[in-house]
Length: 151
Length: 151
Image 1 (cartoon, rainbow over the protein chains, first blue to last red):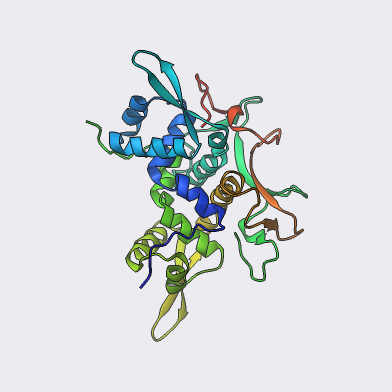
Image 2 (spheres, each protein chain N blue to C red; image 1 turned 120 degrees about the horizontal axis):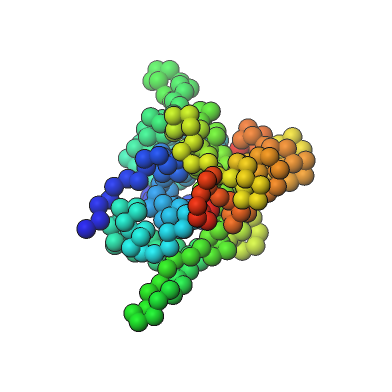
């Protein structure tokens, strides 16, 4: 009989998924990346129930991905901003968007992301840190792996 | 009263999350990327209940991310292999792993991924398609955006 144990130990993918491994958390993050910082705005934009949004925001704050920043006194009110660790999740969201553009849209990307400095489109790639070649999934190995792993 | 409506329309992140936006689906994909192709092996390795694994595999097959490939006749048995669309999810998993290495491990990456051809570590980056600069989250804009969006 299989037990539903968390296979987190010693694995960074599982560890990351413990923080952001559900659809709502990733949609909340997408909202904050796009400039929606306040509880009521996130709730209305996503159409998420308040209790679900509260648990997601608390978990993202607890794990240091978002931080609460006051924007009003009396009554005190907060908005949710990305921490440095939160901003580092940008490649996860950009790679999800890129996959959706390629495989889930009808040929045209609904949103084009560009490099702010020069205005041309950006792309997410996996590359070799040494030869700088863009590396395909089939050419990724575990260091010291005996069999052909792609992760 | 907020309704839990899917904000998928015209958005590639939400569209991607409709396919792989839950922890188990991403852990199943991680398993297949690492060379675990059979139902019983995935179940035992992940410690996932059979019914949960069945729904995840069916959805991944239905959406063209995995395909069933027979490996035995009488009785016929299948294993689950990545399609081209499935292999294109590699950057999502690599970027999750990279974030976990940086923010959820104690300074040392549990698994080092290397470029098969030259043996040096790989990295996932977002870069400009034109000037090829590595682009930080704070320097990503929507094309024609009026406000400062980062996605």
